Image (cartoon, rainbow, N blue to C red; front, side, top):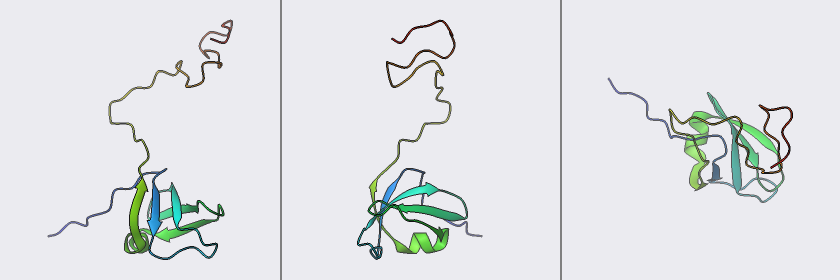
Length: 96
């Protein structure tokens, strides 16, 4: 019995499809995963849904991969990427 092999994709990946979009853009960002793959054209921001099987046939190349957290990684909710944002855990804190 064979098992289906799926191409591993993540939200935020940027891909190139075999045919250009009507606007002339060729790069697409993945915005939804499931039985259907949601894509957004990077040129005109138009959104489409493709069945996973159709997406896998039309996929030409990965242009960039999204950063995916590894299982078991923990994120400290008090750590912010922006140093001007105050810590949410202490209501009296001042921006760093």
